[in-house]
Length: 425
Ligand code: HEM
Image 1 (cartoon, helix red, strand yellow):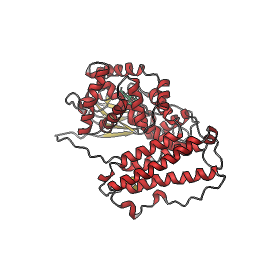
Image 2 (cartoon, rainbow, N blue to C red; image 1 turned 45 degrees about the vertical axis):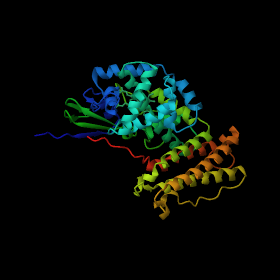
Image 3 (spheres, rainbow, N blue to C red; image 1 turned 180 degrees about the vertical axis):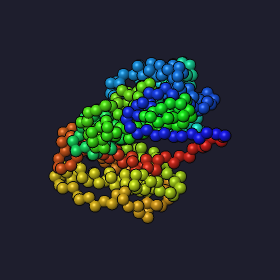
Image 4 (cartoon, protein in one colour; image 1 turned 90 degrees about the vertical axis):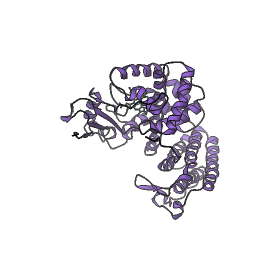
């Protein structure tokens, strides 16, 4: 006879903190695998380990992170080659850790990050196998320290990239542009890049009076805890001026994110980059995903209360660029921008449902890269005063560029459709 496993969900700030501090609630252990595989990576990093093993691995992480000065990271993330936020994050960290070929490292880490909390995948196994000797070549540490360094890059990749995306989205809704620091602090609370954390009970315990049996699963709803009305005034309002306790987005002791200051520095550096680069990086990101959309199976992808298809995503990105370009040019010419009659994402047209062929990929490249070029040339020709105190009513042109970066949303709704081989059990 098997006893049933219960799942407990905690949503209150105080309960989530209690659960995070409870030594009997630990991350689900990873299963092991051959050295250099995805399973081996999970089984060898701090993130999925407990007790003394966690403490030893945590010390390895902290030693690596102590070598990376957050202010230097902010400068590097803000000034190196342009790119998608996740790529800049990993490239900057990899370079600072002395790894060679940081662009290739970033590409491999992005693949690993996509499988870190999920199932094993052949492409992720191949990426770990590729990364391991490269990490060891720079500093011939033991495999555990090498795994820790790979784990550090993986942990940084998606969470920091999403923080940048969410902060750009939040900036759209702020009537007055907040400082980058205030924008990030409130985004971490209001729209956290990590929304839930999971634990398994290794012994019977209690949280908020709830009995949790050995083997039970616990879900900690960070997004809800960050909007707990007992802790935050007007919790569902985005308020960059807010005071109050820090949100739980970076976790809590003893596993509080060790890269917290590094994450904030990297995100701030990326957010403060030149606006032209931000638009170019957005278009590059969209086109990288569009390159995989010939594999689309014809089923629209839901996102919030809308649906997206490859054609619709390209249409929305192009229309968004055209719309704000017309607005900027009108304002620069002292004219009123045209009134908004777009139906935008609310409608899905018959043409949106058509298959996405290689010819469509090619045309999307030609169309979007030219639009990005026009935007980039225009933004680069503006003075800082025109960027920040732009003529006519509406957002500053710097803010318009940041707003456009949010167009990744349409393409991310479809995501990458690159075929991934599944491992046979
Ligand atoms: C906004 C960005 C980030 C967020 C929201 C975030 C959040 C978190 C959270 C919640 C945990 C603990 C997970 C748990 O207790 O189950 C964690 C662990 C970790 N984070 Fe971050 N993180 C971010 C960026 C970074 C960066 C930039 C780095 C490295 C430079 C990093 C490295 C790590 C590592 C190595 C761990 C595992 C620590 C351990 O298991 O003891 N994170 N992160």
